[in-house]
Structures are given as structure tokens and as C-alpha cells.
Length: 453
Image 1 (spheres, helix red, strand yellow):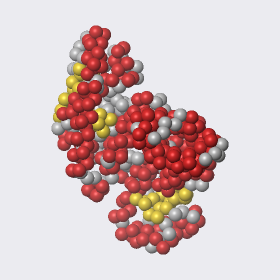
Image 2 (spheres, helix red, strand yellow):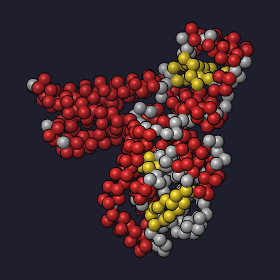
Image 3 (spheres, helix red, strand yellow):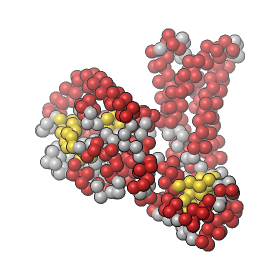
Image 4 (spheres, helix red, strand yellow):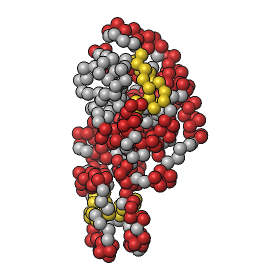
């Protein structure tokens, strides 16, 4: 979805939240002393609205996947408002001295008004965005470009339509381009990166600027739409321009947060850790803790710890890599429960405390699998940052079950390396929590032992 569409949705949500608050007070108090009630509620609810908007972002209400159909839209809105309302209740009661009110009926009524308002607003947006996408002309040919064209055709609500596709940009196409722009009313040209190395193509595109068109590099547009990078279109120079290997301030603060939270969670979960270890030993043969060599930052090998959820045969502790299959016979009955609840990940808190991994980052892979993955272009880039307990690839793509899927996940890992920030990390944590507790998108989860993620 284009940035313009996202800004429209965000601005609409801000207006809608305040309008919903006003409507709630009018309904609740039947218009009596409205100014007094508005003054009392305005400041605390304004603080809450920041959290509500962030929950909307985490629930993908600003991405095209929320607009696939009306049923999906309703489910996401109701889930997002429900989560935001629960968070509001907790905050109101924890910080009564700050908010100076503990609304019950008002909050329930406000949530209902927001659900109705959000549905009307977003369903209207869906109708407009679906039938009035901005025309764009795509220049170039590659598998990634064909992938983008298919996506835009199937998802007009993404905000763009491919009005024309110029596969080869020769002299004839250069001369005909102004006519195509005028014919389709195109305001955007999406060009393949290789065209920037052709002086004739650059001159022809430069001459188009007075026509008021925006020329966008395909890699940037692909990243905007899919929130991953097009590996097949990248070259070494792209990484020199876009990837920063060191961010001292960010890295220092992130390490401090990892250590403090890692220690806190480890201590708090000691009773549960001991209970799980006992039940593993009671229900199956083998060690309670599963230790495995993984590759981390700068290609350094470390030992990753997890609760054992499998037997030790056919790709278990014998070190033989094996893809996890659906209904995998190696998974023990108790292991299925651990995987379902992701409690098998608890021992990795020790890895976080030691600094082997962070809470967020590309998932560390087995040494044997890394040797296979090095055949992927630019695979080593994912190792310029510390791996994580969960990551951008984990919340956007299913666990790998083949080399092709592992290569697809690499697109998300490199996107994270390029765009990593505290906001992205927080979004990853919240979305991971969403997948743990809210069954919104079946089949997505943080991978467990023996998967290649």
C-alpha cells in the first residue's frame, strides 16, 4: 500500500477516535455538561489513542492484507479494538493517579462506536481504493517484476495498477513513452535498476520530469509493497548504499534491554522451567534441554538451548539436518503442547542474557543448513546483525520446509537488516505476541526445534 494511502488511513483514524469519544460522551450523558465531560476525558484518552493507533498498526490495518475482503476487515477491526480496549482497562487501573478516571461503561460504549466507525470508514476506503488505483507504467522484465504485476492486478486496493508494461526499453519505446503517459494518465514510472546504467535510458527518463511523473526504482517500490527485498534485482552496490553494519547507540540500548528483560524473565519463569523439564523427563527418554550449534553474528558459532520436543532419531540429536513436516512423527505428545504454546523457547532466554542472540533479529540457523544457504545470493548479510528469538521473517512468512522457502525468508531478513529500528523491533515483539495468543492467520508461528527457522 502506498504511503499516501497509509497516511489517509492514519489521519482518518485519528479523526475517527476523537469523533467516537465525542459521540460516546453525547450518548452516555445525553448531551448534559458535554464540555465538562469532554475536558475530563480528553487528556487521558489522547494518551490512549497513541496506543490504539499502534495496535491498529500491529493488526495490519494499514496494510493491503486487511482489505482482501469485508470478512477479513471486520475480523481485524474487532480483534484490534478488543485488544486495545483490554490494554486501556489495564492502564486505567494501573495508573489511576495519572488518568484520574476509571471508565467502564464509557470505554465499552467507546469501543462499540469505534468498531462501527472503523468499519464504515475502512469499507468506504476499500471501495474507493479497489476501483481507483493510481496508474503506473512498469519498465523492465524479471521474475520479481512479473510477481509485482500479478500482485497489483489481484490487489488493486494496494493503490496502484500497471497501466502499461514495457519489457524492453529501446529507442522506439523511449520515443513512445510520453504518449503512453498521457494516454493512461500515469503519474508513476517504476523502472528496473539496470536502466540506471544505460545513459540513453537515463536521458529519456530525465526528459520526462517536466511531465510531472514520479520515477521510482523498482527495488524501492517492491520493498514498499511487500516489505521484503527483491533479491534477484540487487547488486553489491545496493548494500553499500542501504545497509549499515554498525549502529552504536541502537546496539548499546538494545543489548541493555535484552540483558535486563532476559534476566527478569529467566528468574520469573524458574518454577515453570523446572516443571517443564521434569515433565519432559517423565514422558520421554533423552535430555530435557536440547542443545544445538547455530551460526550467529559475524558467522560465529554458538550453542542454542531449547526444551526438547522431539525424539533423538531421524534428524534429532544425531546432528542430521531435517525439515520439520506436518504431523512429524519425531515430535513427542508433550512436545506438541510445548510447540503449540512456544514454551519450548524458554531456555533461549539464557542465550539472550549471554548475548548470543537478541529478542529480535534473523533466526539463527543450524551450521549444516547455513552451509547450504550460502548458495543464496547475499546470504552473509543476515549475519551482520545479532540473530533473534523472533524476527521479521517469522511474523511475515511460514516456517521453512524447503530451500525455496528458506530463500524467500532471506528477503525478509535482509529487509530487517536494512530497516532495523526500535519501532520495527517493537512491532516484531507485538506481532509475535499476536500470533501466540490471537489466531488471526493460521499457519504462522515462531518456529521451534528442528525447523530450519
